[in-house]
Amino acid sequence: MQPRSLVGPEPGRAYVTQQEIPLRGGNVSTVHRVGNTVRRNTGPWTPAVHSLLRHLEYIGFTGSPRVLGIDERGREVLSYLPGECGEYPLAKHWVTDEALVAVATMLRMFHDAQYNFRPAPNAVWRSFGPPPPDTEVICHHDAAPHNVVWRPDGTLALIDFDLASPGARIYDVAYAAWTWVPLFSDRDSYTLGWTRPDRPRRLRLFADAYGLIPRDRHRLVRTIRKRIIDHVEGIRRMAAAGDPAFVRIVRKGHLRRPLRDLRLLDYERHILEYALR
Image 1 (cartoon, helix red, strand yellow):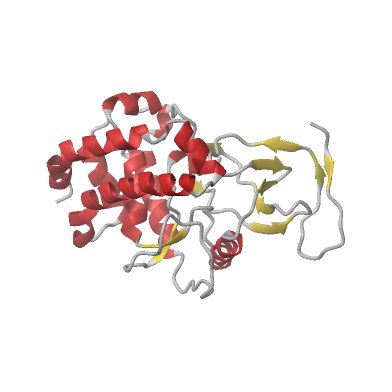
Image 2 (cartoon, helix red, strand yellow):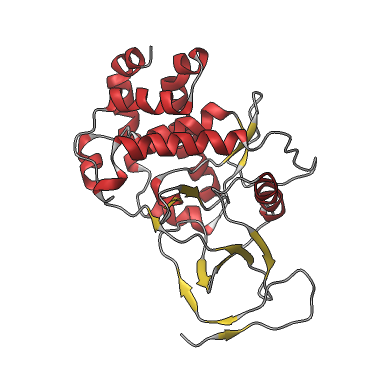
């Protein structure tokens, strides 16, 4: 690929002359690396996401990319976070108890870092539906291994905030626990890098590391089930509305595994709930 020259007089825009390198792994966005920056397609939700990322930078949270502007092609420009991104099947160091604890701790820090953040009243978010009545924070909504970077210094960072929108902390915890414990069938766990994880023990470990209060521990399994259903229905709804990214997800059959996860959750609900007591 030939280097691409980016020049222009507009203030607040980022310009470089470097080669563009496609980054793999995204189902929703087209992403390229240019030097120490990342270029991504934008949408109506981008200003709201940028306001969140700028707040996180202002208060000193280091687990997210920095906003650097918009390039001449209308793409957002973010700081590139060096490190290893989760790629399936996951390497052994991604499926340890230590990694699980680190993710839960990072998610708690992300939520806590939003203290005093107030999005604009007319903020537009790329959400699957209206915000829930118990909105507390801006949820990432997709804190799965493929959106986590394991940096050279051993710390973790979140990337891909396109699906961020207002929600309850436990809703974000539910999605992360689903994808990190993981609450997948044995067959799917093995395919994605886990070897018969002890699901009840690891779910409790995640809840402990995040610091879930008793009320949230009591409803976590129910919330995980609701989060999976919302995940499936939301993707179907956005695909039906013609969103190309979600049309591809449905056509590739990516909704079959969540449906298997629902059956697993129903079968193991009592032992999972007991482990959280």
